[in-house]
Length: 556
Image (cartoon, rainbow, N blue to C red; front, side):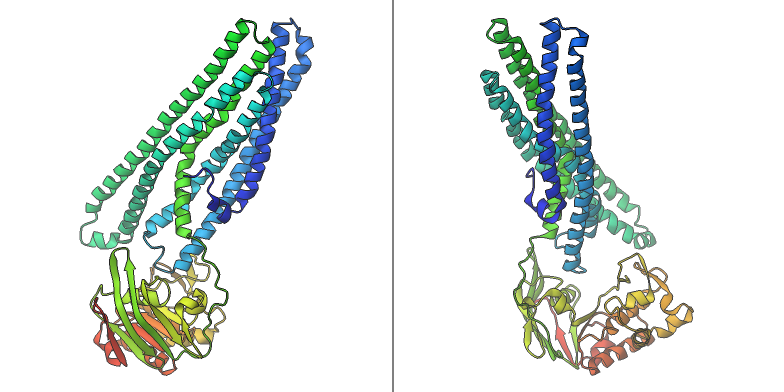
């Protein structure tokens, strides 16, 4: 884990201002430390060697008190600035990560479960508080203060300067060795926490089903086992933290002892002045103090650094902007797929498939469960990167998906997934029916919304409760049936009048009457000139299709 990750400066731009401020505060602190050592040593020499009275040293004591106050104020200011910068940086990182997640689409980042992402976006990023408030300021001081101390005493005592210059690098060396060992432990801790979060999320979402089949208690053992593993990994990190702090403290103490022994021997032999020896002895521990504190704070910040690594992996490298991205102009005449394949690691999620879906026709995708039909739809819309093949639209010109900006590409599509998520434009937990349906068409009129509901075969059911478009809906679908949720999702797609309508088993949860209404809406969309691509299992859907593409899991 690098002390300062350049990506942190890129995505959390407020970190740049904080680093500049930390350097200024560090330089002032180094100056105050040197002044403090000089004033304190002069007071002690005046009292013990010169027999000065309290009145004589009172002005120096006042100066020393002022130095203490200035040092305390600098520490207070640095901590306040650090916490404020941490809050801003966390907000910027969360915004960048959230934007990346939204760009990935509904399937989320590859290789990450929803529970892992949620844990990372909340508790994980909060771990950066210790990094900003404790670790980073000490890191700046660890660079500035030792250099300032060496420059201050080089003219007073060359031997002590050499001892400090030789022993100081040992502390960063030991810190690097400990850090390399700690990284693997922190990574393991985060993997366990991600697995625990994902398992718990799946358990909560599936609890009604588990309860219905009497299997809810069986999951208690799994949660307990993962929780125990997380406890052990956390205690392992803490154990390393305490032991490494002991090692660094011992090393710093021995280094200061070498300086003290050297100064004491030369002072006893009359080779060194008392005032110089006292100044060096007071100032020498200050050279090691920031490094010792960095070692102590590193483990407090390691969790935040580990989380930041995963946030950067989630965000990914910013892709260079395409100089002239293609645009889809005119009416879409066809959607083409050639040799499209998708792999997730070593798993072949979709074997190569090719077909051409024409405007004004319904193209049904059929095949057994697990053959890759949903993955095919996700790849067509750009939610999942294909491992091979191409997707294109025929309009005024032929436009490839790879040459088109994602937003411009997806603007041509209306999509109804297997389970519709009823969110509004603000992505809030609850939204009105109108907010939900106009998510992709905010300028749609109430008449257009009602027409879409009517086409989806749910207008009468909505009107029956008396609330109409003002009815509030929950994202988890509570209060409405799965079939109603699916038809509301269809209305949301239809209100945009998309040129390409993609549906994933739109009639799976419907009764015969509702299914017939949906089939009529799909047929009407095709007759209006849209390319309709639908995953179909039920005979009624296959019966209205103009062509059927069979996905078998092998080459189609």
